[in-house]
Length: 241
Image (cartoon, rainbow, N blue to C red):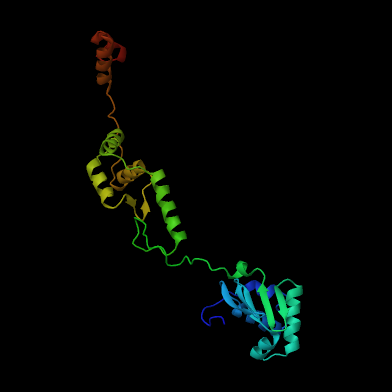
């Protein structure tokens, strides 16, 4: 006799099956077969011999089913014949009972490994636990994407860029600040450190310093030094006396 513990899967597609949903009693017979079929290899007696059942098989009889479901015995027989004709089951009938095999048992009753509550990893930038394998994969994708799109600058790079911009930002202060918060800008990962430098300039009112304008005399001297020309001639050319 099969164990009374455990459970079966009842797929919603059963509602689309006109055979087993012929009426309430046909459906009751179908569920009875599912509940009493073996879920693994099981040894029992059939037709006077020891028989090893496979998953999805059971040994029963129309009288037993009718008694347990409180149905008419002939209607149980009609239900089983319809199930057989429509290839829902196969059955071997003898005077001592019948061996019933449910077709496609594995398709709907195969036990799968549950995926819930298996992942306890955390994203490096979040304190929230990951609850499923899918979420863990998404978390890894985000981290890989961040690594591909952003590379932390060195102190030398920041210094060179600030010098090029002519701002007064302290490169070491810039590096220390973002090292301490994991290179986050607000709630987001930094994508472009140069853009962040420019934001610091605007926030601090630290506009890019412009080169001072040369006065006429300075330009004349520069030309004198570059060309080795007489200073008086250059001055005369600029209209300076």
